[in-house]
Image (cartoon, rainbow, N blue to C red; front, top):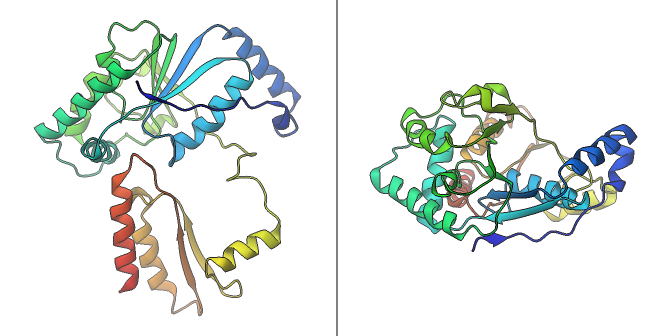
Length: 286
């Protein structure tokens, strides 16, 4: 079976002052129409990265609204996640040669994950390319299938796009962050645009007292009396932390006392992150 992420339902009430009475009422009305509908979100990791961050809040709030929602996470070995990271980068235009062996690794693990998917649902929401082929191997499953893509696939690596597209076509709908991000090979009549949001009450976004912030920054070795160049992101080539390091070196002579801090976390489905982190450490030590 796939790993299930168990979350405690979150009440909408603390959000009411932030979103307003009209929006809160509308959410309750919409959720009432989905009562009795079984929904599952499927992604590649329960921790690290933007998708898991979104789902931790979204699923908990949906549960708090009385909906029947599950969150299941695919499995795979290091080779599988190395391949999916290559596909992930290539869909954004990165260079990647999708060798026959890599295709076999992706499809073999996708079939295995499809076989581990338990439960019957009315709506399946599959996030990003890592689990995308599950739909192909669950062809007999009832319900509606939605592929939710969180990345810019407007200028993909042609070889990877050609490989993945047949596994996306069976989906009933596609959701992208922006219309300009849409994979060109997908059918537009199935497309919906939903920008992402943040949870203003999550630990990442809540306000902290100034003295707590000061102690944390000092504990990390930052001198608060000097200027600071800061990047907060995953260690991902698309965030270009090495470019930030080059900017720091270019401007530090003009900004006396300038400090650099790269702050990030690791996603469980991203072995490339550790390799990039080590490259940053090596570059920074020169």
